[in-house]
Image (cartoon, rainbow over all chains, first blue to last red; front, side, top):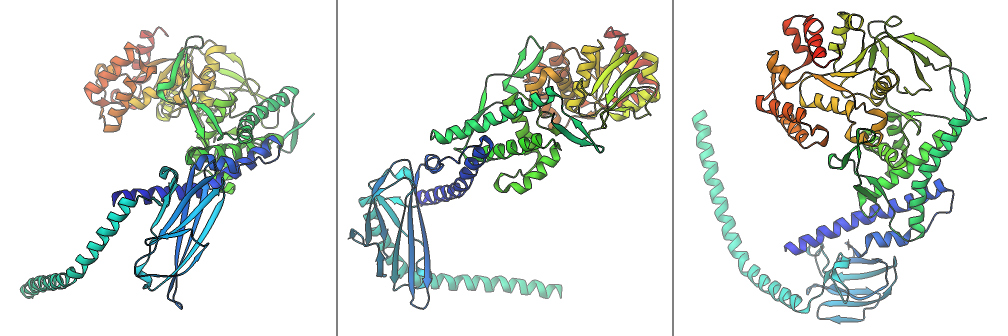
Length: 212
Length: 380
């Protein structure tokens, strides 16, 4: 969980940096060109050099009319070299895949797998997935993975590790089982809490009486 | 012949020297932009180097006898967000300064800060940021901010004493002023530009300069006639002195051979005021040889004065103690005299003000304290 939070923070930092760098570097290039009286130099390579990362952006929208989750993903290569790797998105077990664009290379267990080939420096690639069968609130975060690329270079997706992935699924399955059993306990606990609260209210009532 | 800015309806012509200076300044500034531009064309992340403006990077310059920046350098690189902002602001500032030079305009540092409001992402968030960047530009180009057509707010430091100066006024005409007889009690106000082309010393009858930290003590000495009784030139430092005040003191010391005595409060901050007059301030160490007066001596209030004169005191607060301890590591205070003074103050846990001398009456400072101390120092 800690690693997940750390990665999220790193991703947030990278996104902020990207926004700023994409704005500031062109301005520096333009202004320095104005001062020296020369044409604006190419600055895209400098942006890639500074970012040195593959950024993955994702967005989830819910279409209430069709009761579908529309997921848009974008991979941006902010490194100096071209990149080839697998990009994967996990589909929840209770969801049905309505559409995937572009067509994936494979579906491994619950993962849609796209082969991203020769993504050039500063090139973007967009993906779209439509899922149905889930309540709006049941799906608010994508589980994204990459494979075949230095994970340190990637922000916005985790490195795919088959063993860790299997363990995670197993853990989730166990959790789901526990939750089913735990639901009743929670109701009971909630009842106890309510009683406690009533007790406290009772004390409060007594003090009110005393004041009266 | 190019025209300078309008002055009271007149248009003053720029001299060939001024024009040559402006070309040099613009070239120096363009050099920074050219470095950044070349970095882009060579696919290098833009950066430039600035000498580190820290206490640990000031070294004593034997020739000038002042403290100047050493070899440590700080990198401003577009690789980091802060660095990218710094470079962006540098580019906008250079462009703005070039425009001012071309249009024969000038602005205050405050105006410079407000002008950046229209620079979008390049805008400064505080005046400290813009002032700091201007100092960076000075350090890198070895030009002065006056060359960039930037001037500070008038700070109103004052001078009283029997010295006659010739000042070039706004109209371009020259006027002669005696700083004792032609001024009111407030004295002659030090302008921001005190260079030779603006101020000439015509006749001097003063024997030494007393640089005073507070306005209260300046007024006390004036009211008591100390300047006339002792042929002293009184300069009000007004706290940490402005560059022009320090520059004026240095010129008076060198051109009129006037010894300089600093008379400040007795606390760690006042020690720093003396240090900036005598040795140079850390943030302006790149121009110490223009501003610092190595011959300046510290008269008081010393820690020993607090003891010897049994002066009323205040307890040192945490900030004072931290400042004193920092001074023990400040190379400018690395002398036996200062180490003793600082340690004694820390030991006592007390500080005192100049005006605490009033404990013995309003004339004590001019009748007793200053004459005693000046005798000790060999000035009288």
